[in-house]
Image (cartoon, rainbow, N blue to C red; front, side, top):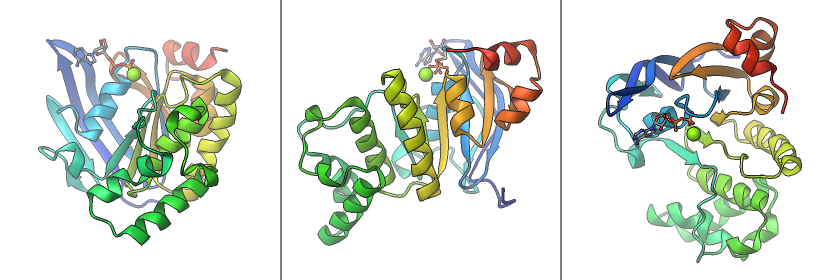
Length: 242
Ligand code: ADP
Ligand code: MG
């Protein structure tokens, strides 16, 4: 991987809710174009970490730096980051096309440019003919691909994915993992993907950060972590079979 300066840096982040620490002394650097998985059990602070990056929460201590810029005080809509959530949260009363075009229209992008970019996104997620459809007529996997298209259309530097495949059936989930990997390779955007499924992390990620109770227990390639887990916790977690 390149030694370009990191797209995203977390430096000594702490976050507590009502006195209960949820993220503890978290430091991470993510390279441009990297696919990083945040892997950990439920309650380990994964979603909170994404909210700190996206700006929906503010850290109690530490720095979030995006493309070299300190994000303190920068609201979510001014950060070059988008999030895809587990529930697809498409606008139910809008067509697929309008769902994807929504953010571009709000920014005042010209109509032909919107048409071009939405078409490119529909191609990217292999839903070329789905523009006129309503969300309720799509399968879960299709809806999640529309959500990805909507999140990528304004070309964020970093895409945050919070368990985007967890609501899907196992068979569809495995197919969507391959789809996600292909999309990442095509767009070259930095992906930070939260999951509690170690197999998913191993399939998808360049590197995996294993979280336990708000701390990073180990970070490295899947092979490195699988081959030499840093603790009993990591060994147990990465060795699970679903
Ligand atoms: P994960 O995504 O790994 O399951 P979360 O980041 O959602 O973990 O939550 C970590 C812990 O923080 C949990 O114990 C959760 O209840 C708590 N938590 C998260 N958000 C809030 C909040 N807004 N207020 C109070 N507690 C919260
Ligand atoms: Mg979560």
